[in-house]
Image (tube, rainbow, N blue to C red; front, side):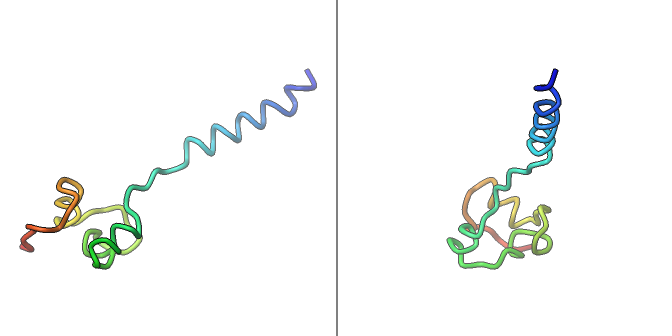
Amino acid sequence: MRILKYVLPAITLGLGLLMTSVNSSATVEYSKKEKKPCTTCHVKAGSKDLNDAGKYYKQKKTLEGYKKK
């Protein structure tokens, strides 16, 4: 019974952290590779929302051939 006093809160905390963590796929490395700022592909800096260039990059893994509309 005494173990549950410590184990249950630890498990709850661990599951909470696991469920709220987010896997980010955009990195500074992409920006350095393409020599473009983050806002080239994202609607605004720090946002997950992609603009047309970002959707193109996600699909092709390059901006070569992308024509800005």
